[in-house]
Image 1 (spheres, rainbow, N blue to C red):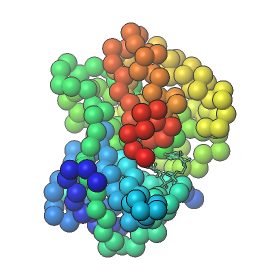
Image 2 (cartoon, helix red, strand yellow):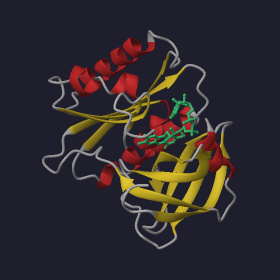
Image 3 (cartoon, helix red, strand yellow):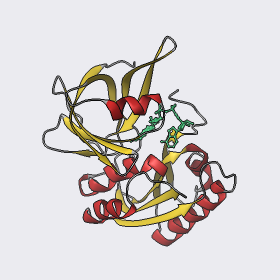
Image 4 (cartoon, protein in one colour):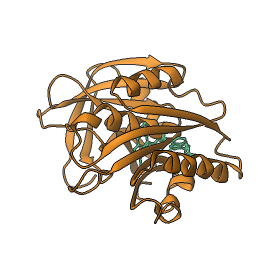
Length: 239
Ligand SMILES: Cc1cc2nc3c(=O)[nH]c(=O)nc-3n(C[C@H](O)[C@H](O)[C@H](O)COP(=O)(O)OP(=O)(O)OC[C@H]3O[C@@H](n4cnc5c(N)ncnc54)[C@H](O)[C@@H]3O)c2cc1C
């Protein structure tokens, strides 16, 4: 675990759809988790892979109540996420963070397009719902590229959350992650939204195969692209 291990507690939880669990968490020492926009924590799930603890990153999707409370939305995939799906109320996990460099540096707030693929929508929800409090960017639209057959969160529930924050929402279905044509299809959607919105900055989260190349692909059409790769990360920051 990185430099600042702390402990979180699961305070409440519910399922959304057939593969998402929303966990309301709080830090045991009351250290702050807010502001949540663009931030994630790395949770020691308590599972071991051989002699190595399984640590997984999860986005701080929204705040609730006091500064030491926030929500995670976890898709059930493998061992790490399953541990969080099975955690009873009151369960405690060590974690590090909040981490994240998704937000631009202070300056004149640029027109910002938030691009999310797949579970990357968790980061987009955090950014959109806090859009009015962000001083470093002006979020004009969230684009969610959702793999065919994806059941993680309901498209209209997400629309409601994002539009309620006054941010435009566009959702497009793309090919599943296993299809080699998916990346080009996704880039076409992103480029169309960049042109339409006149975005100066793009903040992207989700499938690294799609979003990592945007850093060179979209510049100079936009002045800055920041990405958070949840999977297919070519830099493999998190195992
Ligand atoms: C900065 C960051 C923030 C993240 N935020 C969230 C979040 O808010 N909610 C969330 O559910 N996950 C999030 N993730 C992904 C999460 O950290 C884990 O990778 C994921 O839960 C799978 O871990 P696992 O141990 O269950 O499965 P593993 O055994 O590690 O993975 C099982 C398979 O699923 C694939 N996979 C991993 N992550 C995803 C994904 N997100 N979508 C589709 N396939 C995937 C893997 O490539 C692998 O093939 C985030 C990742 C990063 C780096």
